[in-house]
Length: 88
Image 1 (tube, helix red, strand yellow):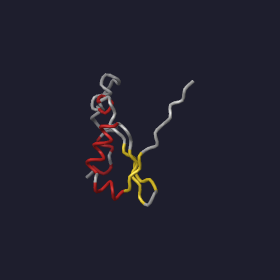
Image 2: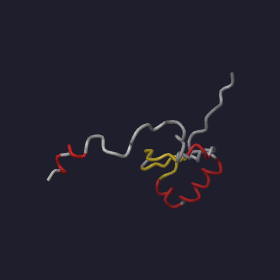
Image 3: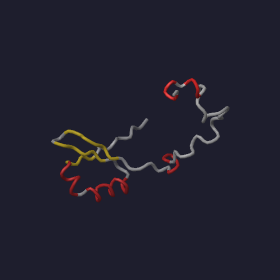
Image 4: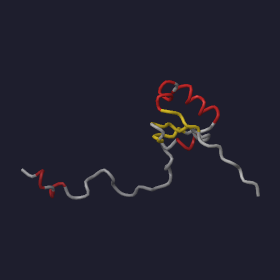
């Protein structure tokens, strides 16, 4: 079995990241290689390329037709006259 060697993640100091943010983000997107931002040699953030599957991030409506609502979900659970704060 052959083992694929992982490339070490590219590290960039936060000052460099601040100065070249847009070009570094462009490189991450184009090369599909993550980037680690460091401060005084310690990692503070990892930047990853976006997922190639755009539907993975489309969560609106993703649960459509998965559940069924039965009964009234709008009305109060208890009788409105039982709520002490509403009494005169």
